[in-house]
Length: 159
Image 1 (cartoon, one colour):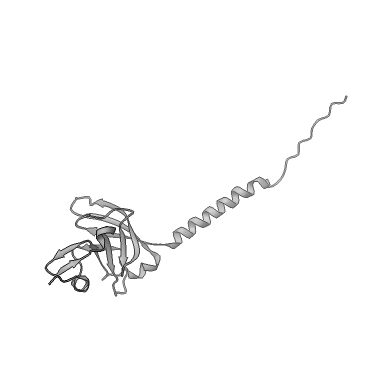
Image 2 (cartoon, one colour):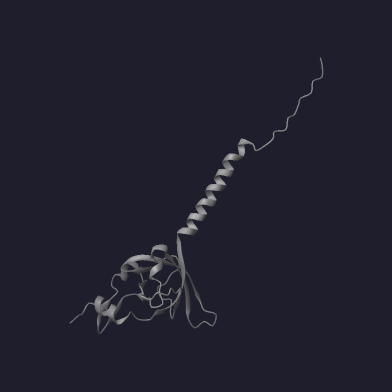
């Protein structure tokens, strides 16, 4: 018997096995780009108290439509106020103006009536009143009480 040697040929180019991982990587990059492109701005909210505010749960609403969510809540460096970060939907980005107002909606009973009853079951949320200014702003102080016009419209008078 003769000794025969196997011949080894080096293949030039890319093996077809690599097509699937390369396609998966490309799809991942495309999905990441789409996700980043569809996100709205991150807003900083400054609060005097974080009662009822939970990261990942507390919603920001405008006209009872959810336009964002609180993503992070922490104490300020000197511990005198709360700093909350919120992710706002891209469609609501135009609402963030210099004169926009934010306040916490929670149950309130007072001489002017009862307001915020809808939060008894769902929990507190932050309401956004869009501003009319031309200048955008991404840091806001959350009002301790709702604006007077909002209270007059939503309160239930007992007498």
